[in-house]
Image 1 (cartoon, rainbow, N blue to C red):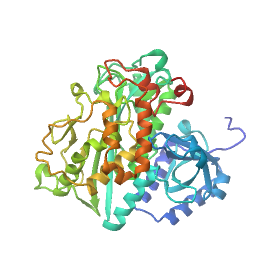
Image 2 (cartoon, rainbow, N blue to C red):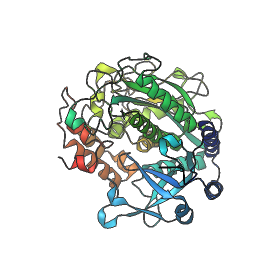
Image 3 (spheres, helix red, strand yellow):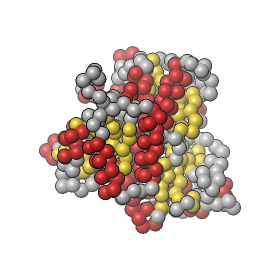
Image 4 (spheres, one colour):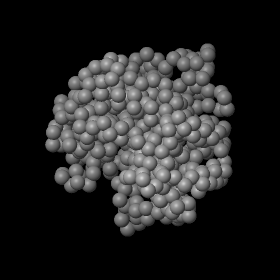
Length: 476
């Protein structure tokens, strides 16, 4: 759009980083909701160069949705935002379709104009039922309520950071076109840590990392991964809801940057057979004030008894949680022991085949790493499942729980059966959400062969929750 007629907001990356880091600090300090709301409303009213506020929310499967509200309309109507929930898979039925959007003013981001468009800011929304109560299918709201409750009752802060791997493929919309082409084309064959400084993959990584810096992610390191055209861009720890929001933003901004460059950023767990798949290793800890409750200098592997109990509860419910962590047909290709697959239901400080690892740490960084999470998992659901289970779950009395001998399923059908039959899942999600989530996964599973074989099938891409659209689904 021409900017000759309007002076829309387009801040430098330095200005964006300063604003976003300030907002991140306010959020981490848990600034009062009414105070942060009034501060953001005043900013929107005073900043004349903003034309629209993009409100983000995620569906039951974790697919991100964006709604642009005219700024002037939002200022007058932010307490009465409605949308058609029947258009969102896994939300309401057509006969009861109206849902509301609340605004989480603490989750407010200033965004680069070259990625999101001029004159826009971004904020995360909370889905509400038509009577204004929390909507049970909005896992972001479920996670936020749980995190807030633990902080209020026990002063616990839930911390998370993820290592999200993905592939960069040639061409735009490579996933949507897979059912026609039957293949993905690498844009780099360099491999782990090895790419030329200005090759296409390195340029994509550098551009994405710079956008992340501007949005306050506080980057740590980035590099090509083991497989050709594979990448990983790491950033710092955050409170659990902010961490899950950053996962959604990470995938959104990398997809947009790839599209701008004529490529596709792909987060299918195993888009190419014969090379390493992509994971989302999820590092978690719990703190109370400035004390990391997972640290014990004299503990086994320097993990505290609290940390080991947390880990044991995850192992106890590994089969119940598998569909939460590995939510697509394609995800079960990744659980292949020939490619460092974290498919063993065990804990280890060294073995990367264990679903839970205890990395080297200190009083600040001690954590557990849940390695069995795929990059296409709903981040709010996955993190809620980890923390709710790790803190409130029961520990199995079976001997040798951490030692192995059990494995995660090698196909989604088995994982769906375990999920549907789990009393624990029913307890933490409710039977309604448990049933709806299982139905969505079963619908995709029914369109793909139970035996995965050695070739990625068009159906497991076409009907993937992050890929499908109405036209593709109608081709079945």
